[in-house]
Length: 134
Image 1 (cartoon, one colour):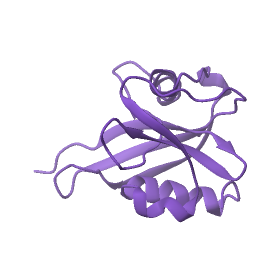
Image 2 (image 1 turned 30 degrees about the horizontal axis):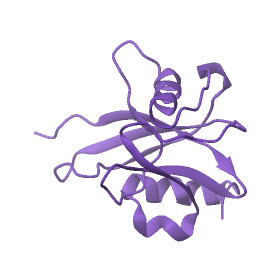
Image 3 (image 1 turned 120 degrees about the horizontal axis):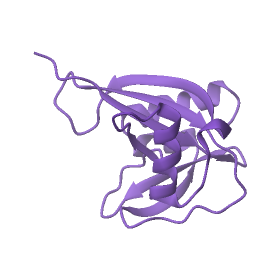
């Protein structure tokens, strides 16, 4: 039996043709600021909450623009377990500040795809396709 997909949301903050990504404390893998959608929460609400929890950026769900959904193998999960990640664009001039669970923030382009799990690689490819990042 295949495990249920991980349902997550993330925020893409784009500046100077790069997108904000983070690394967890003690880890090297780049990922989008985001996380699991809680019961009773919309995807946009989860994206806004996670952006605040991880990098102290404040968004209201109505200010976020849904860009696309990535469906791929979930990083660190058994083969066949999917992640379904809805990616929203958020605009802010504030600087991201790593939270307790985030070790560092990175302004990332497609040149950094080798640092990303499958979902991150797909996000970078799609953002390049939309003409948002290099």
